[in-house]
Image (tube, rainbow over all chains, first blue to last red; front, side, top):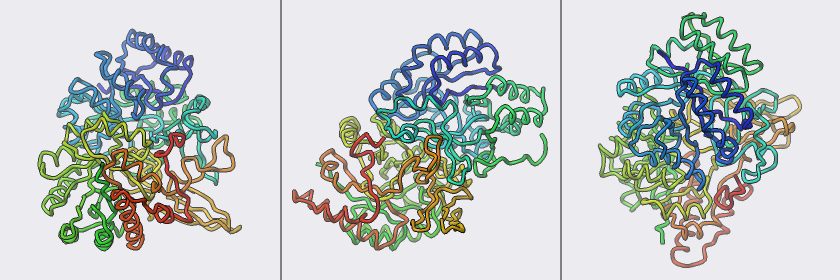
Length: 303
Length: 332
């Protein structure tokens, strides 16, 4: 059965907001696996690490598999240490997002995160030989490449995950663009990113929404929505669909995906409801169809 | 003391000969396809051109480095393998790679050819670099342009391979190899297709008031007044508005060039083995001027003479230039 996962929160949500969010996920969301941990900015980690053990316990008690994700960018001493510490853990499972994590983990089992650039069967085969058990493909991959990668990964016994909902990560940098927007630098940011629970919107100078800033990360303005493509993804060998936490009703989002996977709701109806839940934010599936990522490509025929 | 090799761009066979004649220690180039990160129309080499170029460069003691530094999407890996096989057959001195599958293939199939880790692999810590060294026998890492000199000095102590850094040219803002901005707006991928803000998607739209919008795939990346010079619409160098910045601002970076001339002595002292000049898309005269100036400066420094840094600084005169993250972490 295809599993639904909840990706790590990309934003600097307050400790209280996270506690409420995960309590609700534990109690109500039909997701099978939940990724926790700070992936974007090492400065944020101290704010929510104290709650981590309780959150893990709460989710596990609710029957969710918990996976800890490592930082996407590892450069500073504290980032190297954080990566090393996570890699040293026996449990829960870990998802690695930087080669520094692969180095620290060695051949012990681990998952490959979306920042690891596992684009092809040769790379996935290499990673599997080094102990990878599961791979999350980059969100810009088109359908034929997803199918070929998924087939190879399944053959090697790996789980295969694709982001099916939420803003795409389009870039990371050493520079904090949230701080820059406020005339600050990364070192004196005063955590202004906390103001934007769904990223800071950038618009073109002729007022078209285009991108979102999340600290050092740049994201898509649109939410990826592969709800209409779920049947194809499953047929291609994808085992896990990742929902990225956005500032919308994520329990409801997860329920729509679960209902479509279980054949309990027609895709058209579910997609209409997803658009409603997403408010003013556009939905896109361009990457999957080999087109510009922001685009919304209609399926040729209803599945 | 490091070797302070000068690694120079060769977008075409003519540019390659120019760089060799101007004193490059090594040139880097790619094939005319998605296997390298400068897959631009009119650039790069056919296998026959590369064969002749390798002969030309080797006759003058210059090394040829072949960039295979993109990420093959599943199902298309053979194109990268064939490129590696061709490069090995023609006698290139090293492959510049980013993808682990490509690195693994070359390490097993062509172990006699050196592997350099591309900046596209985004290895920015000693642990990440050691992962590639221990896994694939990487001999040199091209460091991401996000590190300060003290950080480079520290990394040097902890890794078993040589270090190459960018020193001059276009200044990418995003961590290379982790950027899908172009694919989001155009449908062409930097990682998989070697394309960045492609010219085929660029339009300059003149408005009635004389202002100009530079657009990529229909998105306005910047707007310019009647008296402003319109810049190329590279997504990470555009001006946008944000809730706190209603006027429009360079959300990521101003369109500046990297010029580390003033830091050259310090970088050599920090143990950097090789300096990379960006610009495979640049003209022959640009390549000639930049390579000659850096050749003279590096030779002066190696001989213990004072280098004429002013000449190098003048290369970007009239343009905005930056020392990026190298000088101070305040850049971040």
